[in-house]
Image 1 (cartoon, rainbow, N blue to C red):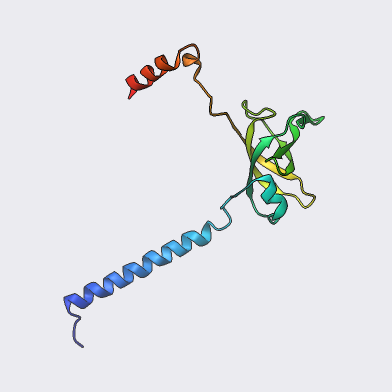
Image 2 (image 1 turned 60 degrees about the vertical axis):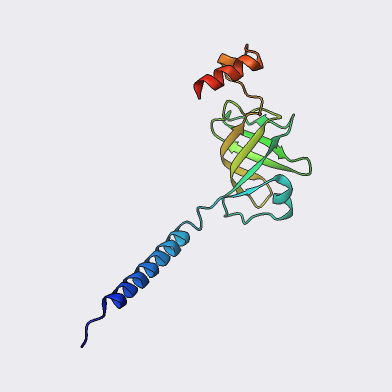
Length: 151
């Protein structure tokens, strides 16, 4: 039996490496298929509800007047809206300090069969006008100078 020429050996090694890379990518994608968390806004979740077993993220604004604390003191109920639809959310746990009515929120969890979003985690969002405590009393020009000096 004759040995492969060097050119053919390289071609075989490249083909094996390519197959191994494709196999590793497919294996990683298959392993992570249930870890993906899709993002919905209330009108999307009402129009096309995800399966009750699928982990998703629900983003929107906490509706004013909707925040209620249950008798156990650690479970809260509120509505998340986007101006077109509202979704009731139930969360049990420690609420982020920035979480207030009228603020943005991203809730991670699952949509129950009854239409209530059961959140496992809440991510509160601050507005774009956030200013660090140290810069609150500065004028805009002073703040720009401080930022420019730190660069």
